[in-house]
Amino acid sequence: MAFLVVAVLVLAAAPMAVVAGDPDILTDFVVPRDLLGVPQNVTGDYFTFTGFQAALNATMPMPMPTQNFTVNKATMMEFPALNGQSVSYAMLRFPSESVNPTHTHPRSAELLLVIQGALSVGFVDTTGKLYTQDLDTGDMFVFPKGLVHYQSNPGQGPAVALSAFGSAAAGTVSVPVTVFGTGVDDVVLAKSFKTDVPTVQKLKAALTPPAKK
Image (cartoon, rainbow, N blue to C red; front, side, top):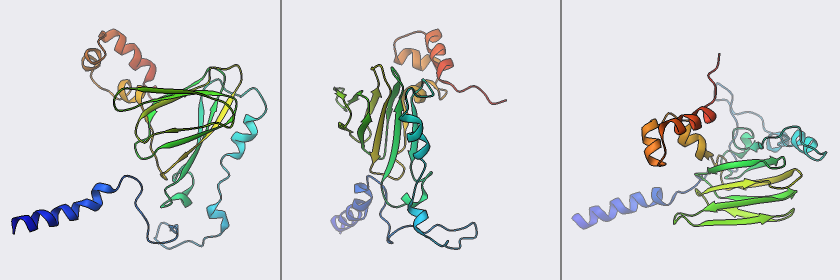
């Protein structure tokens, strides 16, 4: 009897244990609803996203208008038709010598395609091994799900890449901001990184957004 109970519990928990990404939906797509819960009329416009147009038009003429790395996202937040579809995109724009700092995507791998310029990329696996690669226009690179990774543009011209995700909301966890910009105790960080509190405070000051007035 005890064995039967254990077996039932294991079988019941198994579906939850194997869910690693977005949940499946039981319809072709998720129909949007208004504030009263009434289904909205859906046309081809609902499945169309034009949010990359401005970024593309600003990218192709050189130089880029900003010296900082920028990203335009097409996730479920920006493109509601992706709800339930387990896919999303991001356009990454890199002025010369800019960096997309170390970060992770907890709900998806990332498949990056360089469409302009060149990038240096890398990720660290769970054993602490670093994998790096230099990419040219047309090259593709995959960052495994949940692993810390980065992209940088060491060249003399701008670079642009498209990233595809196997989740409608892959999530982004910035390593620098998460460590130094979220209020973790100074002493804990100083001991963790084998440095002193003043150094930690300088890093926090640089990574903590200024208070809104």
